[in-house]
Image 1 (cartoon, helix red, strand yellow):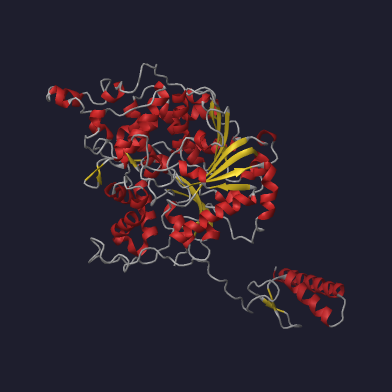
Image 2 (tube, one colour; image 1 turned 135 degrees about the vertical axis):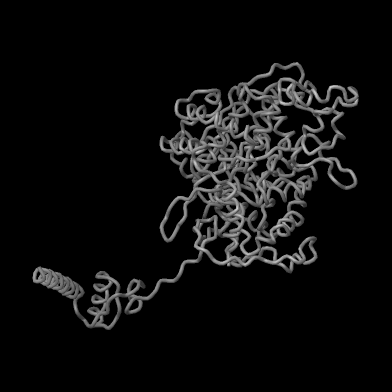
Length: 636
């Protein structure tokens, strides 16, 4: 039976490839407003996503501010850094129109399988990304700074980029299938009802704009964003990663898909946007979906970066229905043209006459720019331990904002924060409100732990700051604000209770402590699903136990078997299997060190000198060695 930690980690995975909360402008999270703020030095700990970076960059260019912005992005896995570099390079590719760039971005971002043309585009980018990483060439050199990475860390990212080549084996469908079977176990044939339960009881309450059909399709097939009714024969190699595990008792690195299979990539880009018309309802149903919202968000970011103007959806597209955001925009003039020339427009779709790439509504007369904004830098760091920055002059009193994802909240237990944060800085932690596989009490306990750990590093909780960040349905973002005031930090630390002996902190930080009291797999049972549509007459698959690879924190980890006793039971000193028995004391022992300890204790009990007893043991051992050598000589 799986523990709650194993169940949680099997769903979210150990290598996250997208964020689990909506993207946000980092300037709005900073403790000072944009009018007073002259510089933003932000530390992002394991965000696993570039959406907030792009949104911050786009809004900064739209507002025309000259705020110097340095974003230090710390990730544990080189695969995530490689995806960051790729997705940022897409945005500034001059050969891509905005519509094509949006489609490729979302496809690589959230789909496990790709179209042929997208896979070919990915192959064409590999060499350019490698040149940027090794030689600092290309348009990304003005945006991304890799100087803080060690040479071996850059080599690891380069190795990831090379693993995206077609000659490298990548069976994404099989990898994801194994993850699904390991997660659902004997309820694999019942997975549709289990997924529907997750949606109805959780996702629908958070963001109803995430359509049940799209969520079901992604959970089963791994396709989050459908592009132009296409086929997806090629694997998304950017989602492949390595994780540490064991196979037949030996440690090894295993390549596969170790990312999210339950949360979905919709929450970061498809749950909220600035256009309220995308959330209109008709007969209590949304007329748009999370794919419309995600496409609008990415297109709007590209539009702001290239023109410096806010993108506004044309009024005539408000009531247009369609699976894709493009479905409405591309047929805006149908009524005026009276269906003339539609065939020609369809033939020319995706070319220079693509209407979305020439759309002027809301564009103003600004000149299109393909360069990153000035005074905006993304600096890459590798690791999950904030204490790595401690003691370095470069990072002393540097950050006025720190954003910590819920997979890295364990770093709040480290005392390096007081050294790297500026006075009046702010620490924003991602909570667990949008996390599946956690019940209400566990989410509250997790969030309360964030506040408690914030006090231990000298931060005070600011509950009012959260009310500013809400979804379209007034659901608050899962963000918790901690303010750092150096003059009050010592008093806050003194008031908080001393840290209790904590359990092991794994990749998800405090999760092991928060869920330590729950040792059972309390996922939805058959009884819970009685009455759910389609749940009748479904037989549960009984899968025989197979020899599977054990993965730390991700796949099912079999409980370790207790050690078997030796010929004489267990050692009285070490507790290891005992191969020998002391004739003098009658106690079993495992090795020479344990034998010496036994004799020393026996000598102390009978008034003998421990040193004499140890000398006798050494002499006895030497005699045995000499006797053994003599026997070998006789045999020769």
